[in-house]
Image 1 (tube, rainbow, N blue to C red):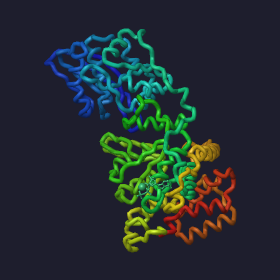
Image 2: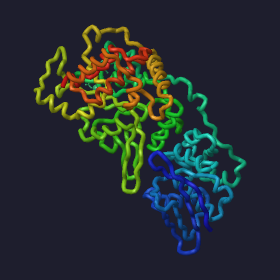
Image 3: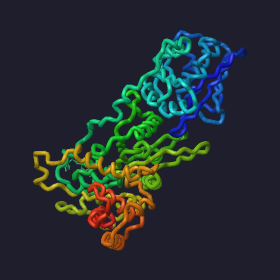
Image 4: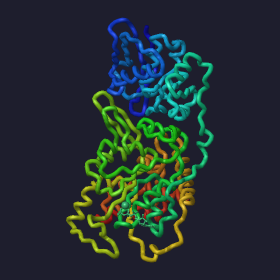
Length: 511
Ligand SMILES: Nc1ncnc2c1ncn2[C@@H]1O[C@H](COP(=O)(O)OP(=O)(O)OP(=O)(O)O)[C@@H](O)[C@H]1O
Ligand SMILES: [Mg+2]
């Protein structure tokens, strides 16, 4: 007998509906899977066989042909275990076939019949709804993630027996309710590191506030132990919370990467990713034969922190250039090409030279000019050009170090100011699809929103001449000046905003 069950496969951060056709007929006993399955699906033959027996069902000792459609799409992953099992049970008349067309099935099965969570359930749930499927059957740990999609009945099952029971006696089961939808728009408590722990460093704190308000890329340059890493790690705590639609976008990417925690509910905090400097190109931008998102996409709508930037391999850093400009990355493979979103804020830190003390007030630098040149050569001009805020972090004064009372302003106050500046930007770009903050402005936005008076224009021209700035760097100065004006709730770009933005080009000045 022939049975057809629905499932889905992930392509990039989208899903494609996949039909699992199972034919059980006479002939030599055996099982074949057709339709470009990967090795995990091939292995499911043996898993499903053992599982059906252990869960108390009969495994048909006949010829079983399983065909995955569309035949030209490569399919991967253990999520097909459940639809294959159900297909075999339906084709051997152990479950009623009536409801099979209404449901989409996902789940890995253990040998004892229990269901294990799989990656990519959120995009699959969204696709299922679009395609008119009314019910989705998933393992318990994926249920909340799937329930985020409205208009779809999600059924959470612990084991194979539950799924069979659901198909035979549908009246017994209720769809899952989303536990935390009500809380989604409430303010989050931030358990993150707080800016109030940071002593002194007013200049660097101000740069963090501007970076958070405008989504600007930032690099801290300073001697060892001056607090660069400490400062950078406090950026997430002053960022505004994700909106519901942003949260869905981020959850989708993390779901595909199999990184969802907390039983698969929505990602609520802006991502903060800090890959080690040994990271490879594909791990940073995404890759693999079934392309998976890399660190830049996992930090979409959040922060990518590259600590000790000069330790990263130069060619790996070069991969960042295009996504930093475009906000997405395209991964091309022979059979498919996928696009991953990558609108992240780059935050980096580095020492000013190999010994670490160039420009330090106390300890002298022991590097030769040639060594310093080689050191900076690792960071190409085009990459540094894309970093709006280049901030020198100097060592603390002795009296600042020994301060016992915490004098730093707590993150929550800074976050309030950042939120107000972001609200101004959100209103400004209300009619734009792809621009959410000042750093994402294009040339036409600059013409509209960053008009300069004569004094400001003179200032910028002098800076371009003296620092040898590129057109991109000068655009970036305008964007930063726009954010500084927003923080001051000022519609116009005044010369002192432009002047402050120019002085965040420390590295251009050093060179
Ligand atoms: N401004 C500061 N206020 C309070 N503590 C600080 C400050 N700066 C540094 N520290 C202390 O020094 C430690 C080291 O700082 P951090 O790791 O951020 O230095 P770094 O600049 O990243 O150094 P490296 O270049 O070696 O990576 C911090 O964990 C903290 O305890
Ligand atoms: Mg550090």
